[in-house]
Image (cartoon, rainbow, N blue to C red; front, side):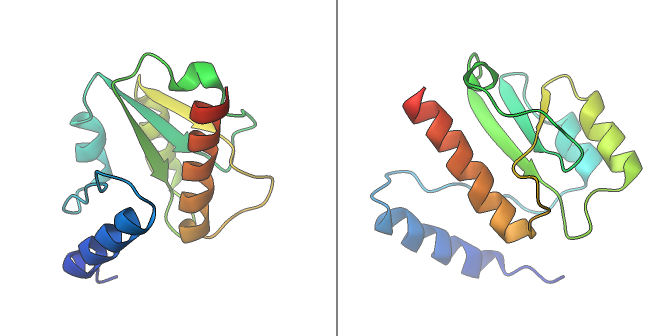
Length: 122
């Protein structure tokens, strides 16, 4: 699909202002999954929202990381090869968002809400 990065940046700025945040999230240019995983820094924890996982996200999963990256699958989920590649990554922490399969846009909101809840209330 076509992705309008300029439009997305405007939406992010508006959402950041509306939620009284100081630093808007960064949008990077699209990259291949294997390149993304290869270039992920050692200090970044990769939180993998995996529809096949039975693990709940815990407070311990969010500690000892300089930054967190939430990975949400595309519509139809990752291919078995992509999933294997993600799980091989040493910083990957697979977790379940819901018992239901969510749309990608809903999964993003759910995952961010879950991370914020755990970080702020545990």
